Image (spheres, rainbow, N blue to C red):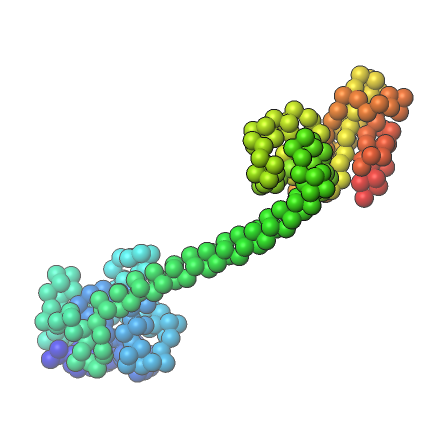
Length: 308
């Protein structure tokens, strides 16, 4: 622009009168704002300023904008994507020419923004770069998440392969006989403490037994578990004799310590709590069984020691 130098000089004098130092970075930012056909946010100013003054930082941009805004040289004109936009507020002296930013009319070619000031590129280029960087960052995040999922799946696949090897040994031990299915399931459960779905599917294919038939057996017999179980099993007798002697109070003490309900497993998979109608030792009631050991009506303190 023909009057760009004069505009700069007029603004420079106004800054001096305010008592602030005239610095190269402040003049660079001011010059960009004077020549801009558009409102600019701090990031756009940083991008354009870098071409003239590579060492400039975002903190300097913000400080300069605050100074210029305080002195009435620039004004904040709304937000775009939560980023404040700025433009020159008004010409500081008669005859000083500046772009009509509000109307969008300017003698400056937007495609060659700030070209005569020694800057390369244009504002639209910056916005394209910003969009590309946003997409690139998002893609990097997605790729990172995909890599994590891939690693998790690879580890899970390795575990599944190991499981199949263990099941092969159990099935071979029972001579690959379909008639030994229940014993095979019992041995598998002793290995895992439950019957994983992928293991049942493998047994179904290995012995050529419909999966529905296997599920019929595992759901009929209460002993089989189709959900992960804790390393330790706790069973509370709720039969008539134990119930009369306070089995409900015992159950409440246990649930209070473990913070789980009957049928649940602790989050660390250490304990699984269940109830039965009879443990066959009514004289000890109320009674609980922990890993095949019987305990008669333990107090809360005693219970914590047992579980520990």
